[in-house]
Image 1 (cartoon, rainbow, N blue to C red):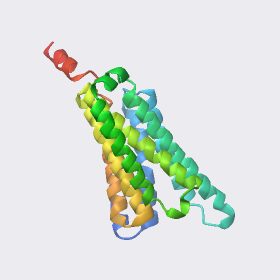
Image 2 (cartoon, rainbow, N blue to C red):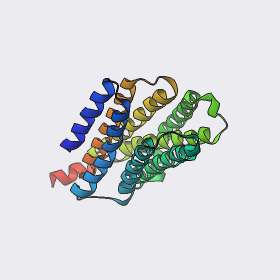
Image 3 (cartoon, rainbow, N blue to C red):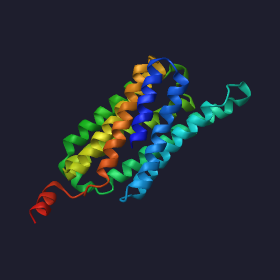
Image 4 (tube, one colour):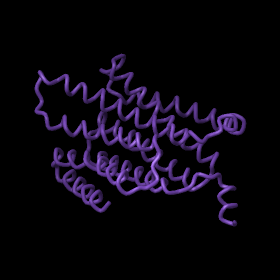
Length: 239
């Protein structure tokens, strides 16, 4: 993992001194390397979490490859494909992570005991989706890009809500780490939207990547933890 940290430090350094192309290349290599280390070094793997990492890292690699293609109007379709395929892979990644997080949830227990939480989360998510869509370039309104961004934001916020409810339900260290990871992912994506559509500043990109790296740190740590409920975990320790 020291290699990942080295690349991250180089990414920050080149970003701060203005070498944006080099910084983007290094940034795009971080998640594929984490994916490689995950499959090589971690013994406990699950299907949906593995699919999450594959889709996320794959989208970064696609963006890296397309970035090396010189811009030409005749190649515009490649850049359009990169946008739609890359973002679709991120959506799939968040969908797989949502399934991984929520697969052990008792839906009837959630509906019966977390009514207020669900109402508040639903209202908050609707408001956040509205705010995020307002940040998207108005020129893309009512277009494919606009609706893709909407689906992206919806699945992202569903992921955060699912992680929070899962923590309330299971109440253990594993679900706490999953929630912290989801929280970092969402904040990272919000900063990315500001970076792309509002204020393209280097520090925003660095902060976004730092949050993403923190999210995957939390995600990888939780893979080795048990997923018993809080009371059950205490009982196991006593035994």
